[in-house]
Image (cartoon, rainbow, N blue to C red; front, side):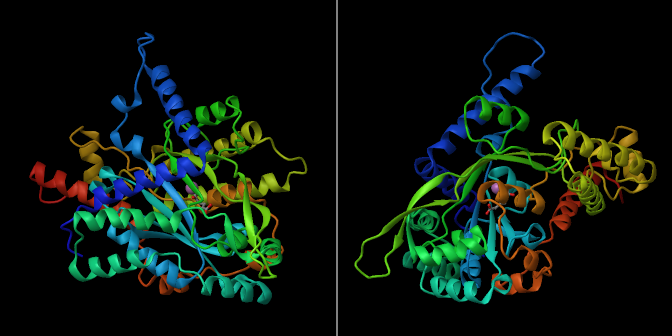
Length: 462
Ligand code: OOG
Ligand code: NI
C-alpha cells in the first residue's frame, strides 16, 4: 500500500481520540492515567541521587513514547468483523502479530495483536490493539445458535468507514479530510452502547455459558473494553491505586519484579458494573434495565523480549510454579509467597541456564540471543554495546488473569474449552492473511542493527 499519508500520524491521532473518548465513558480510566503520572514522577524522583525535591516532569525525562504508550482491547464475533478490522488497522500501520490461544486459559476465543512492526514505527507511536474473536466451535449448540443470530444482524462499521477502506485500498492514500472522517467514523466501532441487541433471557443464557460470550454477542458494536498506559514502576501504581481507593485487581500479572525486567507485567482496576437496557420481547419498545460488567482500565510495565528459547523456558517455569501453587492446599499469598516462589525458580533456573548458553536468560536475552563468537568478541572488547529490545507483545496467561479478575471465571463449558486444540489456521482464514511471528520480528530487528554496525565498522561479516 502506497503511503502518501502518514500512517504513524494517523495512528497517533486515532489513539489520542480513542483515549479521550474512553476517559469520558469511563472517568476512572482518566484517574488511572493520573495515578500513572504520579507513580512515574515519584519513581524518577526516588532514582535521582541528588535528594533535592526538584519536581520532575516525566514528560521531560522519559523517552517520549512512554507518555503516549497505550494498548487497548476489543472482542469480535465473526470472521468478517476480524477481516474488516484488519483492513482498518492496516490504514494506521498496525498489522497482526502473534497468535494467542485463549482456550489455554479457559476462554472460547483466540486472538492477535495489531501493532506497528518496525522500530521506527514503534518509536513514532506504539499504539496496539489486542483483538480477540469468538470461537463458535467451542460453544454449545444452543449458544452458538443465539450468537449467530445476534451477530448476523449487526454491522459494527459505519458505511462511510467501509467506503474509506475501499478508497484507501484502491488509491493507496487518503486526503486530510478523509483522515478526519476515518478517525471519527473509526471511533464509532469502539464506542459504548448501553442498549443491547438481545433480550434479557438471551443475555442470561449467553452469560451462563461464559460471561465473555455475553459481552461479545449482546451489543451493537465492539466497545473498547480497556485502555492501558505504560508505567516505569507498576508496583508503585498498584500501591497508589489501593491508596486512592480504586478497585484494584489483587495481583500483578506476569514475571515478578526483577532487576532486569523481562516481558510484560500488568495490573488493572476491576471492571465497572454498568447499567444496560435489554430489548423487550413483547415489541412494546420498553427496555428492561439491567447491568453488565466489562470495561476497565489497565496498566503495563514492559521489559525485555526473550528469545524463543528463553520464552519457552519462562513458560515452563511459570507452569511448574502454577502447578505447585495449585497443588497447595492453602491458597498462597500472591505478593509474598507466590511471587517469591516464582522469583526464586526463575533465578535458580536462570543461573543454571547461564552456564550452558549464550542466550543467557538471566542477562535479558535477546540482545544477542543468536550471538556468534565474533559478536561476543566485539562486545567483550567494548567495540559493540547493546540495548535490549523491548517486548512489544502480550502473554496469554496474563491476559487470562486480566479477563478473570474482570468477569469472574465461572464457565459451564470450561472443560470443553480447556481440552480444545488451538486453531491458528482457522484464525488466519478468518483474518484473511498470516499473522507475523513475533520472535521473527525481534530477530530481524537484532539482525538489522548488527548490519548497521557491520557497515559502520567496515567489517566483512559479524
Ligand atoms: C483482552 C485481555 C488481554 C492484555 O493486556 O493482556 C489484554 C481482553 O480483555 O479482551 O489486553
Ligand atoms: Ni490489556
